[in-house]
Length: 309
Length: 309
Image 1 (tube, one colour):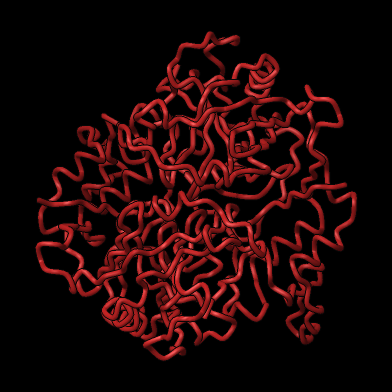
Image 2 (cartoon, one colour):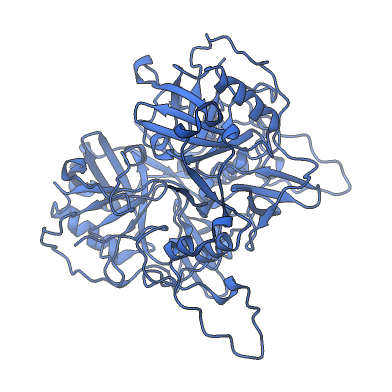
């Protein structure tokens, strides 16, 4: 006996998408049209159009190489331009090379940077706190239909999970699994981007608007989430120096020759195919699911990433 | 430079609790009373009364011993009595000893049981699907004030995160980090409790009411979350037999002599101290947090567990 408990992403041969996905209006008088033919997540990906995908900007893509493999992070200069500039400067100057992952707290964060505080910082140590975008400007917000516990509206901007408050005309990135932020001290100007963390468990949404989220992990999050948990200070610090995980190097994709850059594409979150994925996550109609959720949380929708030839 | 990004649980010396925590009604005319003196999470624990804690029933507490340490799971017979009975039978008969953790899918589940399906099952292979409690009966539901994306109401029952629908008079446990469920095949009667999984990332709330949640990890979740991710079938299966993590033994605490049982206590989720923790999670007023969240999700509140002398 081996009960598979099928994944959210794979292995489900027969997923029905609600007719609403295709934009069909329901009609209270006429009977609803028959359901569309079953469409699987794989089918959504397969039938997606080339223009529904984008290649992340190499100038805003980081490769963090560990002994165990590569972590790819896409920066979010739409929300945190000053942090993105700092991190580009740091990566360009090889600042992170030889530093370490020194903190892994269970169901909280994996954090890296200069554990001993000995490396000279080639950027100013203070930076304006880019926690909330205001004015919102021209961001392309794909709003989710089911609300949010923490914010007036939740959705996606350019592949990043985000929230928006129409009343105050502000928007901000949100702390979902795999989101990357800038650690800081008590002073909210003390997180210039030299110490970074990734959310490794439940969304830490109470941190929204209190820290600068600088991007998200596109690939390799498993390398950060599967590390041993630290035992120090009740904060997951590695207490012994030899527990720390060396960062071999962090490079900006733009600093590498074209041939050495990964050929990654991210699905556009304002595309019809992504809207189909939202609906697929809201209402699973395959044989495994007996009760469709009918709702979906912003942190429970995968934004597809693929490697192209 | 070492930016700590303080934990949700530790290290914060000066947390203000809103006056509302103590039950003070606000008054639109008279000015609000001055804030209560600062109270830390540690202070809430310290000032909690002995009767605000309970010792989990040894007959519903599992010790799963791995080479890396012990995982303690509290069963939830209030919601899944048939599954609890099955699991007690399995543990009592040493069924799990020598089986393995054979699946770790990133940001999804860690799963264990009989990977090869060769061990005779000492219970019936089918069991009624205990996904939703109906009628609710006498459960003690501590309702959260900020709503929920997936359910009409969210809250806690006896230390377990749960949801409730007053319209249908049903309640169910929810898939937060560290919750444990019974894996199954497509047929919803095929998950009798011999294959178990723990949520190791974002809450998989779309699985609510589709699988039987049988309890939660009280201690040792870090041992399940830090395992290497599997690469098989896109489902996190360990492809090589030697990747599997042996389960040394699974025992019911009640089957051990009193002296060998752990002295754990769980905070009662209907207690004033737990209500103070809910409010502390909703609105952090310490020096680190600049913008109190003002809301809290059911999966973002820790239920304290402590070891007593």
